[in-house]
Image 1 (cartoon, rainbow, N blue to C red):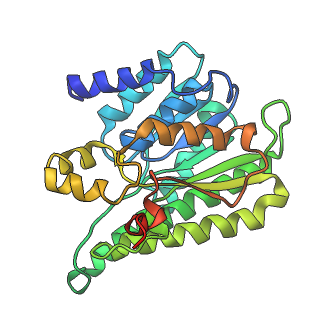
Image 2 (cartoon, helix red, strand yellow):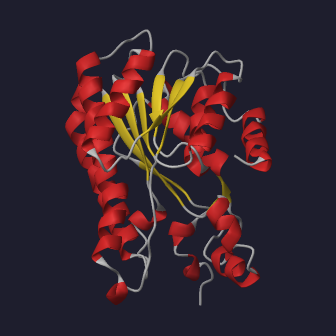
Amino acid sequence: MSTSAAENVRAAVGRKIVAVGVLAGQKAIVTGANSGIGRATALALAQAGADVVVSYLAGEAEAEEVVRAINDLGTGARAVAVRADVTREADVRALFDRALGAFGTLDILVNNAGVQAGAPFEQMTLADWNHVIDVNLTGQFLCAREAVRVFKRQGVRPAVARAAGKILFISSVHDVIPWGGHVNYAASKGGVMMLMKSIAQEVARHHIRVNSISPGAIATGLTAAALKDRRVAEKVLGLIPARRIGEVEEVARAAVWLASDESDYMTGTTLYLDGGMTLYPGFAVGQ
């Protein structure tokens, strides 16, 4: 990991993202936790007191840096890094086995791992379609299924949390906004919405809560590079009534709230953190 990247992790940890202790004693898995929204969420959960499995596919050095940052927080939170391909059933089972081996129990799953591979529709390859669907939809299914099995087996532990377990899907505004040139991505996120709602409906009686966060434009390494082009930046900001790009910490704070008892009556719901992108900004001024 570069010096600047490591400093960014430490800077994020240094900011008071969430209330310390709200998730004390809880254990979490965050997929895709070595960068972007996943990294910020792992740090925020740990700041709130949870032990965290930092799951990653590539970027081992970055994942280990997140682990070191969590272990150095001073909140008592612990962390371990585990490599896992969420599209492979055996890897997902091994990920959960490692989590239970490290921490004994599990309370929170943040299904964050995701990819994009856009192309004009008639040029999109089957490989590109399958890759995005496999990671963004099938991977979230496999992780959620394993989490439900663990949560049902454990049941509610009142001294820890009111729910037997919490599953949080990190989705996208493109679960409702069509996206030409990215039909595989939009289809995967639309699928995530119904996956989340259907699971939530089925497992609510077991005191398992399932929700989603659908971010709009968020400042990550990929978006920062694109927004250096002034024309691109103006086009993107024109789609956002708030006229700004969101921060990964804003998503992370919402994730902590959804994982806490403060949102215990919420399940099957999507929070849109998008600066108003889903408000049809083209109609902001009446004609």
